[in-house]
Length: 384
Image 1: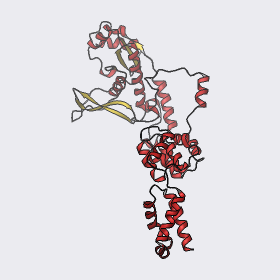
Image 2 (image 1 turned 120 degrees about the vertical axis):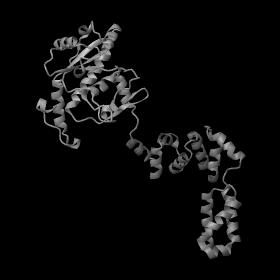
Image 3 (image 1 turned 135 degrees about the vertical axis):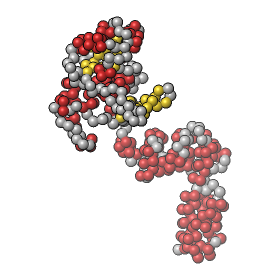
Image 4 (image 1 turned 180 degrees about the vertical axis):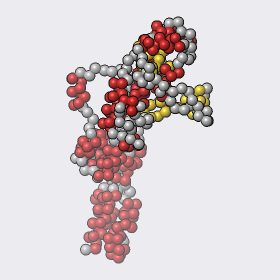
């Protein structure tokens, strides 16, 4: 094919293809095979072909596309030893044309046939001013559809000068089963060539003012989102999780004066709960109205609801969820340390773990962090 147009041959492997060379080949082939459609319905006004006469009677037209130098290259139906059709250019052109919704096309190598006579074929070649080696394809369909079909066939014909395309192919099925193992073009492999406008949404005019408004309200980029989170006191892991789970907007919207790490932890652990409820729960904890150990209990009790801080506060009071009084807590801790003085003197700071459990049991509702700090201070004072 390339030799006929004095074009450079294909390399042995597609990995060695040169884009510049292929572009030059494509340009030369496009000049060799232009989109030159002809309405040849008049040639078949008295045809005996049922397919063509039926189409013309229903308002269709017969369009012809000359394909210079391709006579004898379309091929005819030939079977291999297993009964499967051998690949041929004509079948590829038909497969491309069918993507426009037509039932098929006729090409020069298979005519006369299908009711098309030698006389009609000769008149057609004269009408198209074809030379000896020139071929053509015909399509009988509504004009707009025939144009689309032949344009698709032309694009496929031009591919004959290039390497076999990488594409998704469709198995030819007849009567609910594969016909003979042959395939036809279906769609390109995913890539830039697959990008196309949304067909179900009509185009909308985009005025300058609208474009400016859109440009001023674009969503934040990933980098901008990360930079925004960096302004809060969160760990690297928390920031990454907030971004990955797309919770950063919620985090920033309700952060306020809440401690960053505590707010991030609560949101990540209860992302299905109302952010407003979570923020109010944490605010109560920071105000000293809710013990740290009861935070999850309060969240679970109000899951699925956006609850005000006042309502949550009343719930905490009703269920006695406030931390133990720090003054009374200190007395409890000092009493426990004094009671187990010999144990503390023997174990030193190693007594922290065992005594934590004792204190937490004795001072129900106490904040574990407060207990730990007071117990540490009490043990250190005894050991000094």
